[in-house]
Amino acid sequence: MARVVALVPDLLFGSRVQGALTAAGHEVELVGSGDRARERLADAPAVLVVDLVDASLDGAALVESLAAEGLLGQTRTLGFYSHVDADVRERAEGAGFDLVVPRSRMAREGAVLVTSLAAGS
Image 1: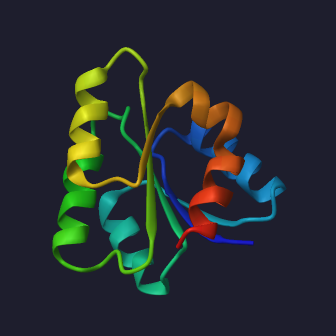
Image 2: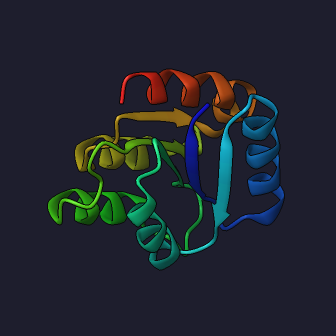
């Protein structure tokens, strides 16, 4: 189906995301840093999934800079955040994410969300 780069530093949740997306037929590369995600964009994945929960990662700033540098191309972006952190959601939406969802929704519907985004790219 779609090539996906998932920037999820949390190995446990990253494995869960990777497993769900792989089971749905997506080719998923799990990366743990913004630098590595930036490198993998050279292969033009259909979707970039970004963990907005991890305090060590400023996912909104990363996507904003990738877009400003023209590195996203046709790659769609999906961010997930803690449902109690509305500021993170608003910041990510302002940074230009195509879709921002609570982490719980990512866990339940990640494959469907990625499929939908990939179809629109």
